Amino acid sequence: MTQTDPPQISVIIPSFNRAWTLAHAIDSVLAQTVAPKEIIVVDDGSTDHTPEVLAAYGNRLRILNQPNQGVSSARNLGIGHSTGEFVALLDSDDQWKPEKLACQADFFKAHPEAMICQTEEIWIRNGVRVNSRKKHKKPSGLIFEPSLHLCLVSPSAVMIRKTLFERKGMFRQDFPVCEDYDFWLRVSMDTPIHLIDAALTVKFGGHADQLSRRHSQDRFRIEAILSLVRSGSLSDDQQKAAKSVLKEKCRIYGNGCARRGKQEEAQTYLALYHELEKGDVK
Image 1 (tube, rainbow, N blue to C red):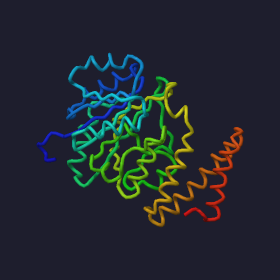
Image 2: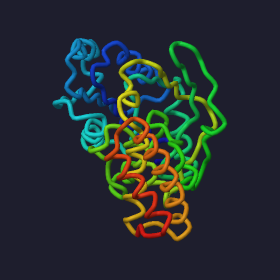
Image 3: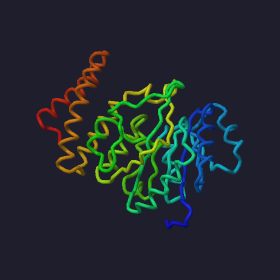
Image 4: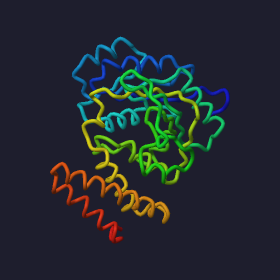
């Protein structure tokens, strides 16, 4: 991409029964100071009035439809059909500031070796702006080890060279939550994730249909780390850090299962904790 080339950006918006907020997300893309090459909305089997919302935009959108299969499947479908050099993901309940895409396009022009960058965020919960906690402060660069503890990358904040998906694979479709945590770990083990220190992504939370309210995130974070530990793809230092975090997550989640009366699940994760204590997990 030269200084005079328009950015070839594909925007991917997966949505399921989000007619009440989807138009706000789409409008924030249409308001960008740099127009994307395409806006792909993947309707993941919505049963509300999503089709009517989308129809109002005419040919300004590419609309893909599938039976309800989850956010990973919807994102992957959109990415697979995209034609831009870059992919920008936007969750259907989030929005962008008007200069978001332009700022990231400028970053890639200035850093042609970069594969992925993200912006800072504004958080709105139940209609009220909230300050992020210190532990959520986003680092920049090779962020694998801090990313083990919690997810430090937001799908709505990133722009990614499409070729990165060819190297790292897609979002795991067997994860109802934490599919992004899993993907960012696979990326960050050897690829810098750069931070643009400007709050250009607006994230909305607190609503009842958020997936994180319905599934245990720790269970899937454990699976993501365990897959990497067993893959043989980590460096010695990364393997040591991953096992340390995995052990702690197994202890916490296993004890939590025991308190909730899920004895079989508790035994599974506490047994894995003891294996890690003894160094038996390869």
